[in-house]
Length: 347
Image (cartoon, rainbow, N blue to C red; front, side, top):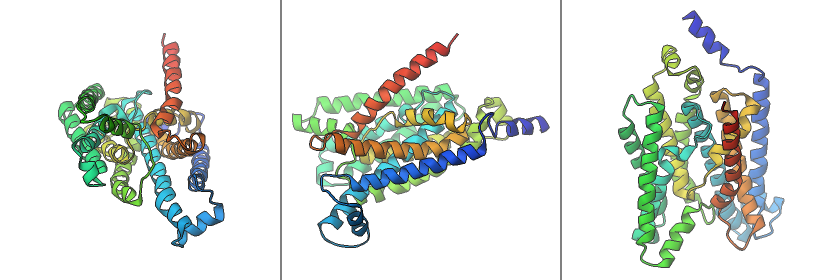
């Protein structure tokens, strides 16, 4: 027990990274998120100043108040929550799988949530009931959890979890393609494609209240894994010897990812690469301990998505550039660089 305790203590603070540095990075990211959130409230087709935005948030039923509270505020809140979700889930999955290429869509949640939303679009439920689309997305994410857990089994390894996620992703993608192929009209197919590209346009506070409880529960489940992920850096046998139930860890990981990422996908569509890129950018700043990367990754993801949403509104304000397209344009080159660097590091 003395050796195990000393080993756990040794991994609590990585070499070369001081706890004070972690705190400074976290505070800096928090300030950046606040600035990006304020920028999201200020940027838009209607020229509204800082004082008018502040007044519109607290009072006033005029046009400015309605624009700020009903259009810009929900968009900014969703950008913050979805970015934090993707960053946190990406850091947790990379820590659990000990794989730098892991990201939130790896276990099939994103594809299944997209399929659930596509079904509501294809069937016409989304047109008949405004909240049918996000509800369908969250139901799809729940189905993905059940399938992944059933396929992987209780005592499955990380490889089995990945394979189960790939199977669910492939099947959900195939059904989505079938829905596109059998769409009743080109306009219906175009609506499905545009939604799948990911966007925060035309979201309301109703979407915020619908997604927020699921995201909050998911965040709590993922944040509770910090110590277990640190122990897993020593290997699964060492983690078990330190008293961690790996079956429980995996269940909390899958459920937390499904609730938070499923809710994010349900209200905004598929937004990729944030969960892959952000943990990699922040890991050298806070150390390579998985538990230390999680909170900064959540803040970094929120800042990145808010900034990307601002860029979408500034670069092509009249063309409705989709948020998922922009994050892919940012993330794909980074992904290629990461693959090349990993290949060069191999003997």
